[in-house]
Image 1: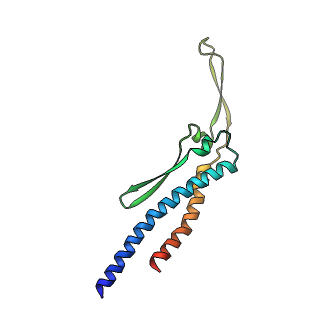
Image 2 (image 1 turned 30 degrees about the vertical axis):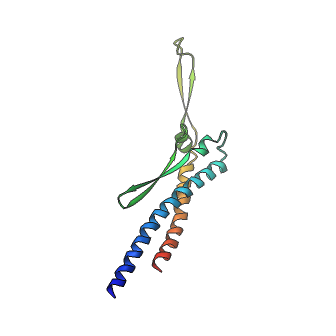
Image 3 (image 1 turned 120 degrees about the horizontal axis):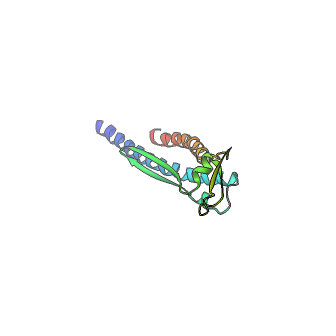
Length: 136
């Protein structure tokens, strides 16, 4: 009798481990989809480089699974968080170069933050479904 319980417990443990791995894959794919969708909704697409640069990596750290969300576009941080506007006048060669800092800033668009927020909401419902499959 106890052998049956032990066997059932080990099966659930294995299914739980597989579920966490599946959840990491779902979260990674969902994040990229949400980031690309938000980029399009905010009309940040000119060449498609920013939208196409959204990626995610799944990193295993012991028993933990971490989803790393990345945009490799050179200017991604400026779009995400905003930046100060700086004008340049003159010429370096002629010695008249001058950097003019303004108090104006571009507003951040927070595409990554929005995508992470939506992914978390989606994943919380997915976790409940996966747990029901395993334990009920």
